Image 1 (cartoon, rainbow, N blue to C red):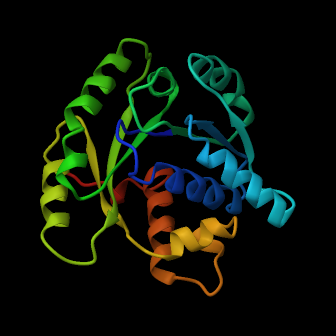
Image 2: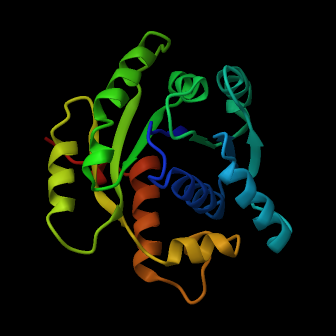
Length: 220
């Protein structure tokens, strides 16, 4: 499966989700390719740190930009069980190209108004991508950096769950120190010791929802 982490706003945690999903899939035995299509190169920097600390990242990582995202991924797709693309946090040629080849777009939102304001732009990009695709694109939304309490989560969830062209994931990813702590050590949150069981469970649930388990997707 080809999955693109897609957003037109930075700071929503795409790279964190991308590297944690890549690690989770590689630990399950899959041959995984992580594509860094973000000019900030966070996934590339993380992979370099991980390789330095562990000797091998456990997945293959490459950097691609522009139309090469489409051409190279089409060529590489038969070689990998899963391809995870970390696209930049704005409207770029790389993001548009990724949306034409991905099976699934995973679109993270923080439970904040500024993030939700990007919905129209995201929907526009998904509509444009249809013209370059032979198969439908599954578009999933998820709350990332979810607050531990308060009404913002519920408001954002209701907004996302009310989009007919998107499927809202019932799981969410909390704002947990385990994620930056793991990243600083070149690890996925599922590898961190001592384990943050809630963070590990969130990533495991997300991976299951994206790659295997349709039950985690909200039904309207």
